[in-house]
Image 1 (cartoon, rainbow, N blue to C red):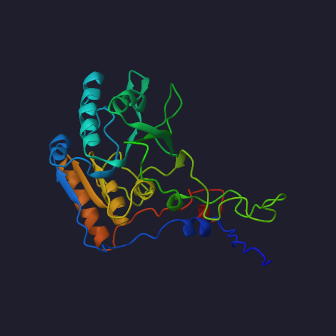
Image 2 (cartoon, rainbow, N blue to C red):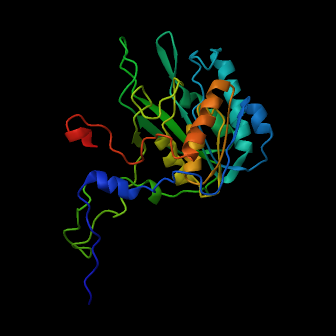
Image 3 (tube, one colour):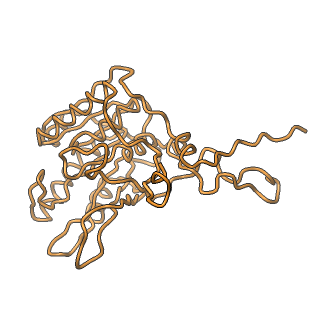
Length: 306
């Protein structure tokens, strides 16, 4: 009997992380051109045929009165969200997913988790919740009368039980990559998947603050690497991806990086212009983004672990 081939063990966590993630194309390879517009998302979506998008990924305004939104009564805000969500569902492919990333609505010091408020909207439209993903980040405003918030949620909904899903492209390094079975029929074999482990439903990505390489003038910008994980796991090459609250185009860029068709709209012309410039910079190989799989900066490690 021939000896079993044992996969090599990579002890360097940074090298292992880099080995797991697909290499990003740095320029357009197939002349894909994103569809972006300065437009109301309801008007934008009315021009889209049914069953078009394999993935809708977005972070809508939280009704906090920031520069890019007007604060409205909560019931009115939820009614607006319901209308947009219904149009997203209409344009969603039968095997598609919607990832709705939100935080908290805050009123007089009381927080109201927006994903719990929008949950009934998605359920009434027939979608099924697959994960409530926690996005943890290390920096933000400091609170005085409650604990400082350091997470938001991504609710992953699917149109049916037959949905597109790929785990391998988003695996992360195993905690003990060299661990092997110590008894039984698998004695000596690796006990974990050599490709890495499931990233679980708690994700840690730095939010886009002043020292982040992707920072623009948008106050609440999506990190590209977070959207990449959703694009790679929930779509195939050539599929269409939509962000109906596009901002400065992070979801558009993540889709284009991995050969998907990208659509997005926003009502603020300044942000649309920035998105167009970012896409052009990526087309020319000049866009700075945080690489997938790069470890979180750790001051206790040499060079922060980088």
